[in-house]
Length: 298
Image 1: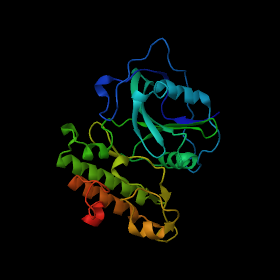
Image 2: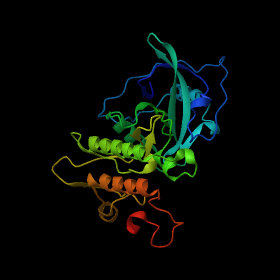
Image 3: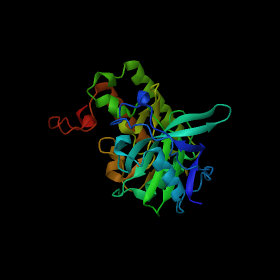
Image 4: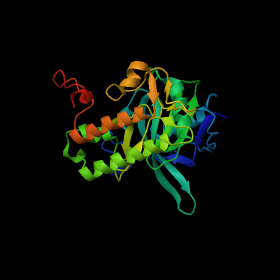
């Protein structure tokens, strides 16, 4: 049996609902032919949270997600990141009493040219399988097939896209009221607090606006745990390692010395707060010299 787990049980895929397509989607896909349902699939339960998946996957699960995303068609693309691309998908979910209901999902697929690859896929699945918080995106499933060439992660669908999309877009329908911005900042502070106060602290390490997703009610959820790292639990104040993250959000003590503190996430949180208050990006090379780095400028 390949590596694939989920808390959902599905038996077919259908086209996306045009009325509920998020603004981040490039286009809406037409309805699929009901005569060609996706293959039936019984999914395994989540793995032991202390075990990171390493064995090869099963192509059946890959075919299942191919059907849900129309073979990862370009007009189902929601966005791209360092790991790969994220696609919208639609499943028919079996629900007791209610029967069948449509479930929208987001599927992250490894880019064949990605330098992050298997290790970050394992890290993200491992952390998301062991955390549960209203302000952290839910892991619905994952799949590994063809060695480490087909790496997929399935999340709950976030209708309003990323905070980055709303802060720095020019269309008026993206503008966030101040009340909403406060609610988003509060939710993100609660998510980080949850991670930092776990029995073994988790340092997110890549806190930025593009990793903050919003649902239909603009409730924020932290996503993309590929760079997350266990914090110190032996009385130490920091852990060490290669400097990873996003320029403009990385704290100076980590950038210069490789010392990663829990408070390194708090630094990044402060940068995002300044972005939310000013509407300016953390790094913008179009600004005049001396003002391109928002932290240094402010």
